[in-house]
Image (cartoon, rainbow, N blue to C red; front, side, top):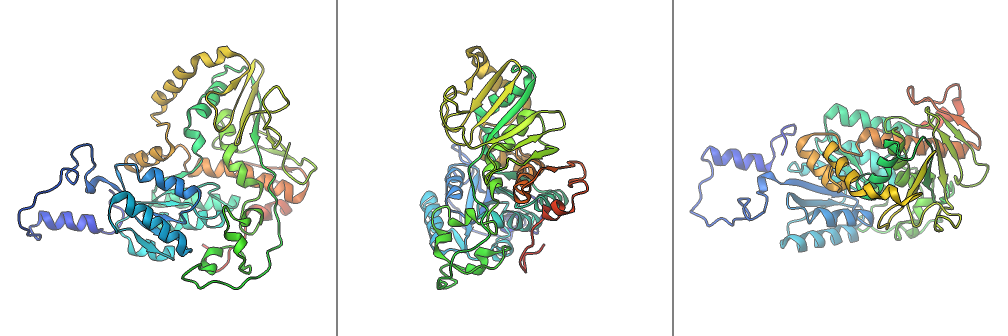
Length: 442
């Protein structure tokens, strides 16, 4: 697939065959191996591994296993139960027993030199460190959201992807879904009139700074607690952190606070505003314990409002129906959409008449598939930046991180998106980065 890494197993075999070093008896070669019958020849497949695959990562893996031009070969997880589950899933899908397992991502990256790309779906604290290590190893990266824990981490990831010339995609999949694309196009095309306010669904996450009581640690082979913590501050083991999505989400040491849910919705709003390479300038503290009703203002005057009350049906005091909703309001109309919609809600039925045509025009103009993982795979081949590339991830996540800082300081803040700093605000500037535990400091 690529030439920037040291010679890998597939390249070695191809070179040896051409040189006559491989001598074999006549064989009957299956058509699928030659790439016939709709199959993709092994030499043309994107060879992938996974780091931290469970929950959302399991969903992503299920999609990858259906892609004919992908071969998933290895998984790394600090939890044996998850390693074994992924191995079984992969082997069952391919009808073999070849999926390799690793507990330490450093061993995966060092030993599997045949990899082209990795899927990273760890907890938040590992997203940027794991992505950076993979990028430096010459791999392209699909990393689930939120893909950074701080403004500084986002800056580092952008610099690393550029320095090593790798492809990065953040799992902000609604940028690749027809309903959300249509809503963004309505806003950007002027069909709503002068855009003045965009609303982003927000959950009432906590940002706890305490920790759960200590429990006896399991054997490292079962759960490597030190590796689970990774760059986060040392905290005693407690099994509750590992249940379901994990109690860790509410703990600021391990998660991203309000920014965690903002990663689901802010990028859509910034796309509608045409602000994927910047962030708002002003952030108003809402005077409450959660970020509901926080208002942010972009340089063009458009307001971004976080909203945790938007679940009832529009017209009944709500903003949208369902999770991860957005709503865009202009001088001549509005559009709202959330997960599970058949079509967006609009202020006038006439706005929906162009739905199919606007989506087709978007695809024709951008050459983007309405399939987020497919966008990543196509760009692994073409080397074109993804729809949710490292810059889009960093700028939209910066908005969320700054909102976090506003909430932590309990006051309004101002942001300079060019210098990426809070002008004259040393207290806020110190919160642009987080300390990392050794040896994960770089």
